[in-house]
Image 1 (cartoon, rainbow, N blue to C red):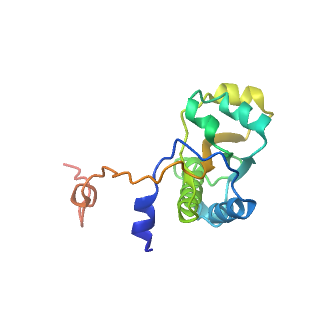
Image 2: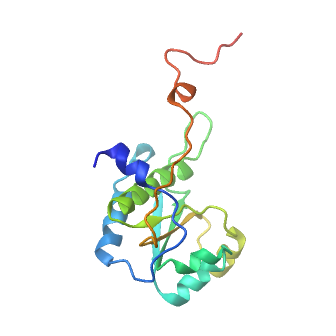
Length: 175
């Protein structure tokens, strides 16, 4: 399948089969994240793969949605602010952007492998930081449950038309 078909197939999965994800498939999707581009190639990310039932319960406790308990694996994407590139002109920290690119690669690779994922950012960060000994320079950016979807999702994604998003040879005028 071509790339557009693949990314069109990706959707947020919120119900997983009660079977583990093969380690080879987890390694495959993590490899896709590893090779993602980053600002100045600094790669300011770490990924923590959780499959142990007790550890899964801890992660589930920071995001109170019933469906999360169906995920056989969860990947925690962490950003390293000390390792990230910071733009010199204004000091902008590119950690979030770089981690987002890597997570997107992971999720698309998961779709290719027949796995479902969901991007979770709306979790209790304070509780997460209290549960784990996270270094000061590290930030939990996203929680990504991963597993086999219960049903095949054929979500039609509402997207803005291209002509509303792309502007040819124009910028915001100063006047």
